[in-house]
Length: 134
Image 1 (cartoon, rainbow, N blue to C red):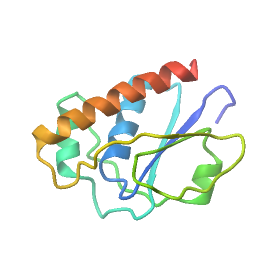
Image 2 (image 1 turned 30 degrees about the horizontal axis):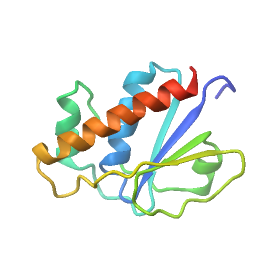
Image 3 (image 1 turned 90 degrees about the vertical axis):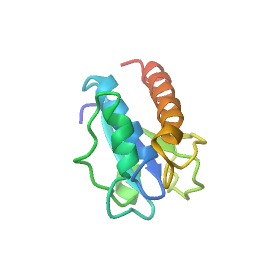
């Protein structure tokens, strides 16, 4: 990782919906200028299939991603840590930028209910990219 390439970590409980959608958007919209990570405090066995379907509508395939466990190292190695409104206790390191995005959990919701969550994530990712000046 070069100092000019910031690293962003998205965290939610299961790392199966919100954080994966945000990571998918950041990879897609960031154009390789940002290192993208995601993790969960209690990772699920697989991604939420409705989140995958909602992202496919945007032309972004996150189906190959796997939920990953949140570790102290991944937080320490990230410049920006975005928690997804789930009350996670995340290790705190001075000098890191922390944001909490209060978003509904897509788990158990229909595609129609997930689309607005997806769209809100996209808008926040676009704001995040602009704020990173990359």
